[in-house]
Image 1 (cartoon, rainbow, N blue to C red):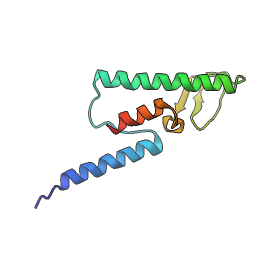
Image 2 (cartoon, one colour; image 1 turned 45 degrees about the vertical axis):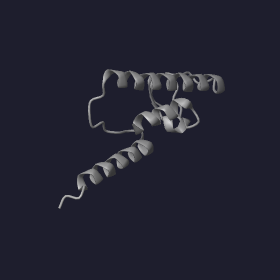
Image 3 (cartoon, rainbow, N blue to C red; image 1 turned 135 degrees about the vertical axis):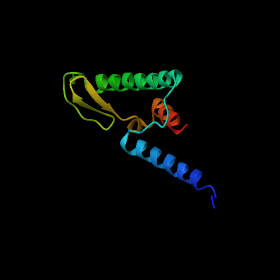
Image 4 (tube, rainbow, N blue to C red; image 1 turned 180 degrees about the vertical axis):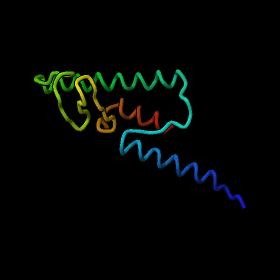
Length: 105
């Protein structure tokens, strides 16, 4: 019989994907995002970048963003102008919460 096994598998995979995103900050999109969704994600990312750059400038004025290497729980420099920014580490931020809500859709 086929008592809804496919739905259970899909739900299990969705829960695993959310857990991977929250743990590692990556996910695999099962379908192509539309322009509106991409724009929404870009706005969230841009706001988060602005927020963390402002915090670094205020609290660590000796750090030259884009030139110096640094590591914080929210952000780490990779190679000059490349960074990893963890929105989940900014959990009190409305930007982080909006990003999490977007992924959970």
